[in-house]
Image (cartoon, rainbow, N blue to C red):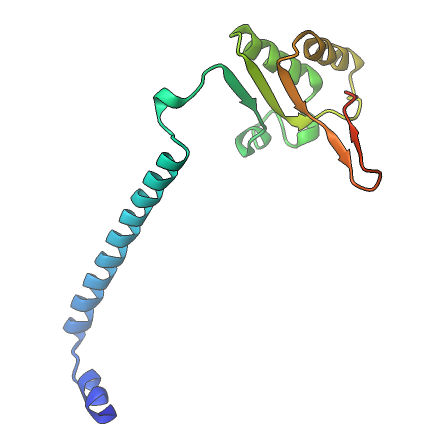
Length: 146
């Protein structure tokens, strides 16, 4: 039996390998694309992602790689509190019900005027939620801003 298998593979010509290899690659790509579409469909239906379901009254603020890699900001520390205050002011102009900021402000910044400006915006707008720091060793939650 093994001898017949070896003989079969020895008689395969180059054109056969190219033909069956091409069919294999085509089928692989087809299944890959269908898998991506199927995955998107499952994700969309699970999270109910459609344009009519997006609540425009909720704003989530987070730093992405594009922002951190821009010409203005080279690292997280380059974004000062005035930038955060201006961003929040622009978002709040649209009167959202809630703004979630995926950042923690637990230390003072380099510019006290910017710190005060951001603190003023946060105090006047209770619908703005910012991150807090949890100290695992002391089991305490630090909710003070700067």
